[in-house]
Amino acid sequence: MVVASIDIQGGKVVQLKQGSELILQRENAGELAEEFDRYGETAVIDLDAAMGSGNNLAMIKPLLRKAECRVGGGIRTPEQARELVSLGAAKIIVGSRAFRAPGGQPGSFAVDTAFLESMAKAIGRERLVVAVDARKNENGYEITVDGWKTPTGLSLVESAKTVAAFSGDLLFTCVDREGTMTGADLAPVRTLRENVSCRITAAGGVSSPEEIAALAELGCDVQLGMALYTGRLSLDTAFVESLNWKKAGETSGGLIPVIAQSVDGQVLMTGYADREALEESFRRGNLCFHSRTRNRLWMKGEHSGNVLKIRRLRADCDRDAVLAIAEPAGPVCHTGDWSCFGVNRRFSWEYLQSVIAERFRNPVPGSYTATLDGELVREKVIEEAGEVCGAKTRDEVVWEAADLLYFVTALLTREKVTVEEVFAELDRRHKK
Image 1 (cartoon, rainbow, N blue to C red):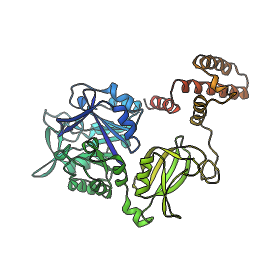
Image 2: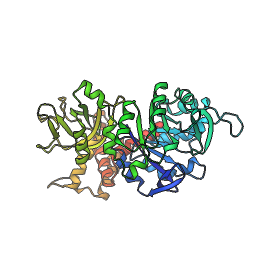
Image 3: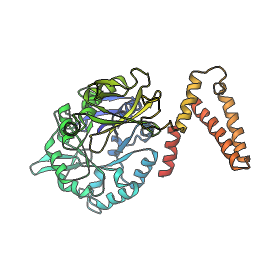
Image 4: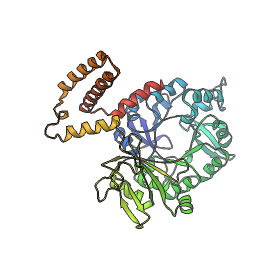
């Protein structure tokens, strides 16, 4: 998996060399989050909170609705972590706090297992990422904290083995190379991989497709910052190189299976892709495959027009298969069925909104939906809510509830609120 970084300082997206020298800054965090989400998770790091000089929570909250974000920077309590998860954070990153010796003197360091246990209990081990940032010294690699300014004397490998019992993912940053684009240091990553079984995300100095491929061969994810923002690397290339092409060559002739799924979770089709097909998918924004029978590239819907518009692509845990979340323009199967698995399109709330949105965009003669302006639709919601409450029989409740859901969906669509946003809010409440 490729993880793109959004580091925030003073309300702006920044890239720092060695954690201190400002190299660039941008103000389009929302646009970046939406773009990055197509390729993998996004690491949102609050540098001000990490250094205890403020926080950028108001800026971060909207990003959690735009992308799958792992959030870090100044998270020091289980309550903070739980609140961020309830707001939509996919994972929580903790760093310096994990290495403060419990009850020790200032400057005393040890892995705080009680703290890590409380974090894992609060949000689940699978959501906890521990940052094991390290510099090289005469004894190997040493954990550093406080924005990479304070050496701890703690061994990278031994610390990683301890924290791995509480976390689903380690974020290893080679501090010596962070922000330098001088190349990844693979030696400590290889050592970590040999000593822990959880996922590892490597960062620091990565600047070439070959390094991403080497990390993928080690079974590690990659986090990109400076190389991405300066244009040295593109996310298209990074995603392709992060896959397990070696295994694909051994088991499926160099092709990786791609499972297409609709936004509401319905499996649509399975195809196969080589590097060219994935690169073309990103270029066109529509899902492309490699035809095994014709031995050539083809775009789904290139003749019928029933393309699959890409929302996001995700590799599986072994990086040898891809899940493509896509918006189908029409029936997917060549037989005319909605799905290649012989099932009709499921009537979902998302589908209802898509139909209503289309009526608003392209009204047809006689369309009642097209007449629902902002005032009328609100009147109908109030009216139908009363009729649901006044329904006497089970059948009446079903009938009136269907009317209410239709008008509520029309209101949401008028206000440019998506069904996904409503589900996200319900999910937030569920996680509190």
